[in-house]
Image 1 (cartoon, rainbow, N blue to C red):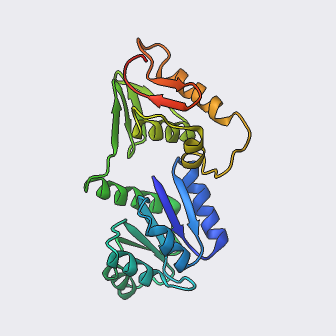
Image 2 (cartoon, helix red, strand yellow):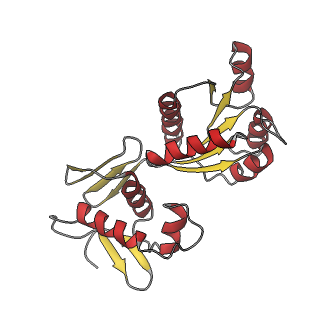
Length: 226
């Protein structure tokens, strides 16, 4: 999942972003309501995590502006205001869920997964297939020819991105930006190492390769030999 955390407490935002990345999700951050609104209007996020008390624009106003702009990205509101009236006000403002602080990360993660699943029911693809290879975004399971394949979180994100663009050339820049969240070239062989590991896991021992190197361009996942 691609998540946007809108939280003015930098330590809290950093903690959440790190925790989400450790379980294989992409997590961007915004530290005030105006910045958060600008990023959320892009519409490329699966779920928004919105602190209620924000500088420049409060969380409820932010969500209301999104809904007025027809952006329906699910939003979970985080707030120290946890009374029933507070929760009702947050949901009526356009929030899809409300979690009072302090909270357990495991509960937040479960709620985020539920919101993503609901959005998937409105047309977002959650299961990718290329030949006999399957990836389930929600359960984080990968299998080929009904044999389960264990992937590390970064490998899962890499495969998810490749399968989402199956049949298309995926460049190194695209991978750096969308899998590693880099917007610069780190001048390392990190992509080559992960592609090699992934190829070994999904292709080794099977009759035909699915992951191909497109010389001078990038990589492509597709069914059948080139």
